[in-house]
Length: 317
Image 1 (cartoon, rainbow, N blue to C red):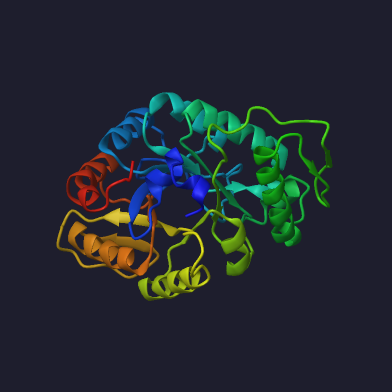
Image 2: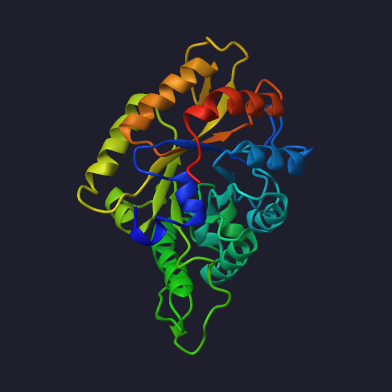
């Protein structure tokens, strides 16, 4: 991995060469038949996964309820919620998965990200996405069709602003940094990890040179193996750049249930352990589990994962 991230509190907890970890996509709640959760006991469950030793808790960026998508994530704004979780947790990495970069001002994101990272004591991972809900773009007066170009530019604005004192940077889609202003605060560590959530309309080559890691969407296991192989082939002889995925998830109460085909990763714990051990060998670094389709209470699933699965895939710090 990049040398300045080797000992980064959040990045090194989640990512290490040859190892797989897993975390959760908020909310920590099953809500298979509704677009949004109740958020009942959300603080207590966040403390539970933190104390159990899971690696990361990821927060989605869903500003509106769009009935055609039918899911509003954790409802709360991710950066506000990350600030709340800074006081509710001690060890777990908190990441965004991901902020819809073309719909947000990159300087405001930089300010918010550094502020949250300071509150978390360096436990923040800044995951950025290009957005996949066309209906949101007119509400922000944004062009859905140029989001890939704006993502690239805003990604660089954030990196330059957080990592450079008195930055100078001209932009096409955003403002002009002329060296007369310095953003405060800066991140807690030397720099803040910037992850791509999904491919954000970019090539694998661009992502491999610019993003510190990629968290994609789950494909069929064979497709995942092929994609991970392509990703790591781009970096032969270069610093390690992790590749992981997020997925809808349902842990069956039968520990012997085989993997079920479909858009939800559904199986008993034995099949999941076998799958993740195989994917670890293939180079998958992290799996983020989305509890929306759970058929069991979230707390029971967390407890089973903590007892049987987490010991096989421990967090690194």
